[in-house]
Length: 119
Image 1 (tube, helix red, strand yellow):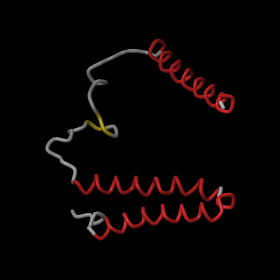
Image 2 (image 1 turned 180 degrees about the horizontal axis):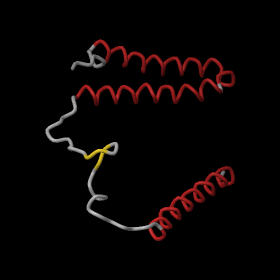
Image 3 (image 1 turned 180 degrees about the vertical axis):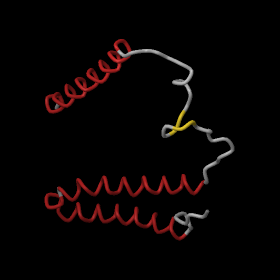
Image 4 (image 1 turned 45 degrees about the vertical axis):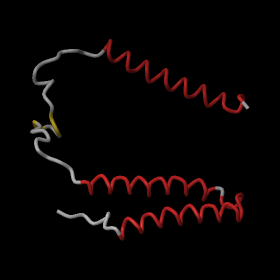
């Protein structure tokens, strides 16, 4: 079983080595001329006023969580669609149950007003 994953493990090790090597190389070889202006925070090229007194609504976080749920559903639907013929009826039923649970939770959130954005 290890032989099947050996190439994957070697590839992951190679990727990690290259990424670590690039980080180390830039820290040693890159120019360093720190100044007060470079240490100032900025946003899109302009000085940042910061988030002084600004609080995000709970609706923002709730919408983000719902997006992640739908995104995960799509991520699971793609491999299933590729192997749909090989999985047969059992795969169709299990994916139907999965989609039903996800869609039911989305409809529940919709009915509770979680998708309503108020200004």
